[in-house]
Image 1 (cartoon, one colour):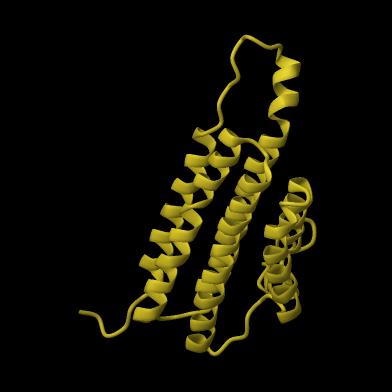
Image 2 (cartoon, rainbow, N blue to C red; image 1 turned 45 degrees about the horizontal axis):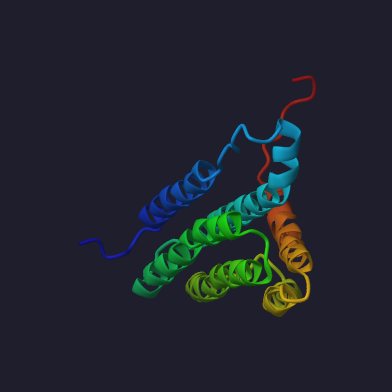
Length: 201
């Protein structure tokens, strides 16, 4: 057995699981019956399509940030392996929660359940990122205020669903928008490692 545990298998396994999660969400999109017109079907399905889009974006954000996070560590520990599995488990619940909204409709309970499921990966991410940062000795790419605001929006979205389901989904969307924009550390690192080309090429 190797003396150190390489993060390559963890990253490859995570990429595969997240790819399956995204594929499952796409396969759950159903074409409406011929009983209603195309325009009416699109209007009726528009809110649910937005929920699917929100789920896709959230999963994609975790995949992108996971890439940056794992890139900071040269070897993984037993705790990191299990924390990563917990993160993947919580992400695998997103298609189920999305399908619940698709079948039951945008109601207070279905959106509250969706928000709870969206919050679970955030909690698992905090544990995983803390373990990796301790292992690598590098700070998190995302700022602490950003994490606090995101956690507050996630928690507030659950009771907000009983006031307005669309307000609750809007709060989750704000979290996605905040994390969709890459942290300054990542932008600076990307620019620093960009290859320079001679003028005219």
